[in-house]
Length: 121
Image (cartoon, rainbow, N blue to C red; front, top):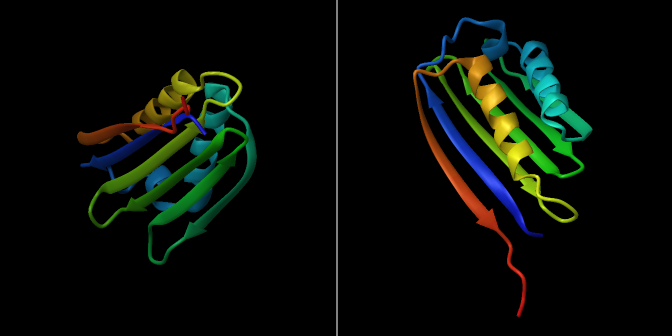
């Protein structure tokens, strides 16, 4: 279960963009970023809130991506977790995180990187 968990809080996003307010547009950004980063989608679900806002998840063979937008605050939370079971996927997770961040264009961010798991001695 060794892996890396990337957590982001993004503020000051241009909240009137389709990628921020519409489920289908955010879904497209996320799925393209997963593919471009070299990770593997095995499932996904995106939910449209009314009047706006999206929550979504992409289930990865390597673990998951979860994202939630709050257009009324111009903010996003994002969670990328990958296992490093058969290979080190850390670089792929970082690329995925950065591609989605760049698409949503926050003015400021908070970032945490958590190393998960350990090998027993």
